[in-house]
Length: 227
Ligand SMILES: [Zn+2]
Ligand SMILES: [Zn+2]
Image (tube, rainbow, N blue to C red; front, side, top):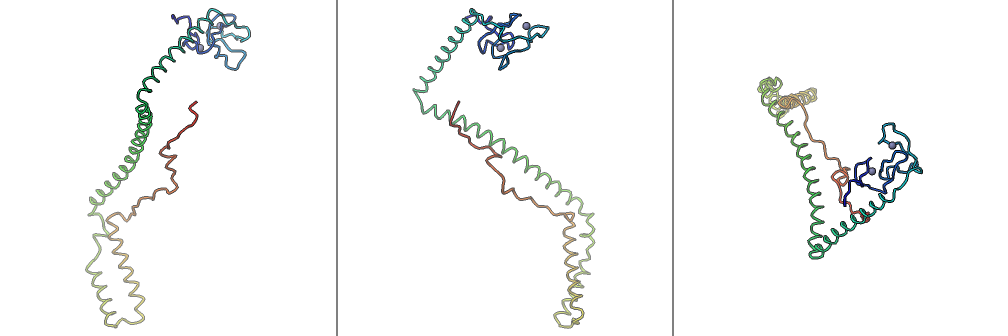
């Protein structure tokens, strides 16, 4: 069937609904372009005049040709459906498998995409750590607290305090003072070690326990009504 005269001049497709002839200009368009309105602006004529639906006519020859075309289309579609059914009937298990496999593929694709995002996220963290590691290693000579700690002097002081304490010659009034000194030495050593990593604390924030995986990653949705 020739279809050139079954084309809507507005949407340029074969009529999608009953063809209607605009009054007074005579263009034939799909009637659905009126939507729920009783009046539209004709965009086909230059002066963009108004068209009342009640003034328009449905021309029988066009309507009939369109009806014939529609029937022919429906028959062709049904024939295809019948063919499809026939082949499924021969191997219904295969159809079920294909049906499920299509969903599986979508699920896999989604998983891969999420995996990429996760990998990207943690790669960035690893890169940051790696550059921090390099920076720390390369600036070793600038770490004054670490490099300038008087280890031997400190050790001598500690040994003396320990020796006096073990031989019970520490005066009672010095007990608190010695404790304080020991605490300060401990702090000094801690700071010297931490100086190697710039005295910064690195940690990973814990995963959000309330994270809704189903919404975040997608969930299998089974809809009962296919229409
Ligand atoms: Zn149209
Ligand atoms: Zn017009």
